[in-house]
Length: 119
Length: 404
Image (cartoon, rainbow over all chains, first blue to last red; front, top):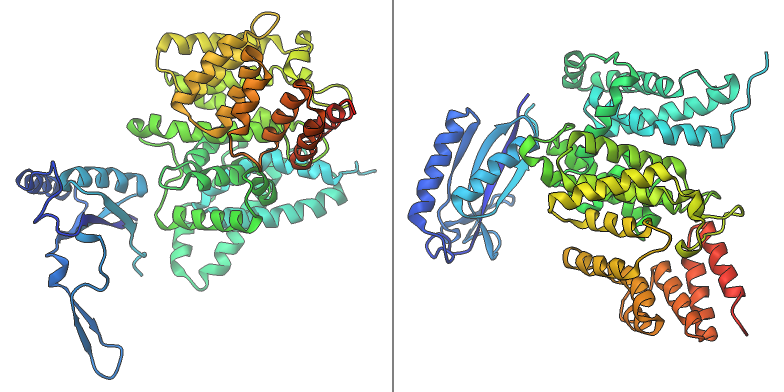
């Protein structure tokens, strides 16, 4: 039974429009494409993609009688979710090795978090 | 037929000795640390009752594995009524009938799991001391100068992460192995020290803990024969352990290194330790444990310690581990090379007030500087903080011998 892990790409706010020094966006996108091919061939790719910047976000709160909309991200933070992969792995060691490759490819730290098991 | 009496101390000793084996076997069988611990807890209660009534079984370790295994299966069955998935898991991983002889590698797997770099350093140490060394929560908390509740929370959180994130019970990938070694080495060294300077009980040295640490270091060395830090760790433990018979007198009082009867040191351990240190020097990849081992090689070479060499090695150690405790130990060498006044200035600059060795070192330096009133105060603070009976007796005698 394989476990699903989410690899979240942690970007400083503004990345990749204003990439940090030493990061070439073209090279980064090429490396991410190569990583995507690699995990697809390895058969562990579940889903993934890059996100538009936080200012495109809308927070929806439908808990009350009327749904309330708010412009912008839920919380203003210095680091934002830039994109993510969902992969399958046998255990954390395998997931961490893929995350290490993912981090190199997208030139950012990657947070690894297991999904709750499916019922 | 009379049943041989089984004391609480017997039971405690056996449990301590067998704990890691039992945990490792159950974790491999059931893949669940909490289940293993709960089952062992139940098995220990049964063991105390049954062993007191019927005497010790021929193989207490095997008895504990079997009994804890049965308790774990009972638990899974009870929970399976509510949760069909666990029933399936039980079918997929049938109960193992491996003999205890296959357990050594499981203990190493357990160690690598406990020392996984995805866990905080504090959690790695706590887990290993709890699950591998079988120390109580109180002992672990005391060893790390934190409240018991903090330690309990730390362990609970770490176990949740092992389970939730699927930290594997296994030996790491070959490429990851060296990177995992230093945290394992740190933990083994701590286990050794926990035994060398026992924090509970009347015996100043818990020999079984030192032996356990040495055994683990040897196992690690067998697995990683080319890793100099593993050789350094083993050398450090052997050269320290070799002095054990001379370290306390017949009344259990600490004997300082310079006053130890070198004839009582365990010669074969010193020879083996020196061989390992030479092997490390040839590899020319120095590290923390290798430098500590080299310091202990100097202490055990010839009729007396060459303190200039020791001081030079502490300077090298500070470049890889610039910690206040290293500076404190370096100051002891400074006292021998440059005199107690220079050493005291360095010791006083360190912020180690909760640490008994800081007070004990200050006390000794003040005594040598003929400042008995201040020395007495420092001895009192050291005695209050020392948790080893041999140390306490030694410090009390030194304090009593101060001039008025």
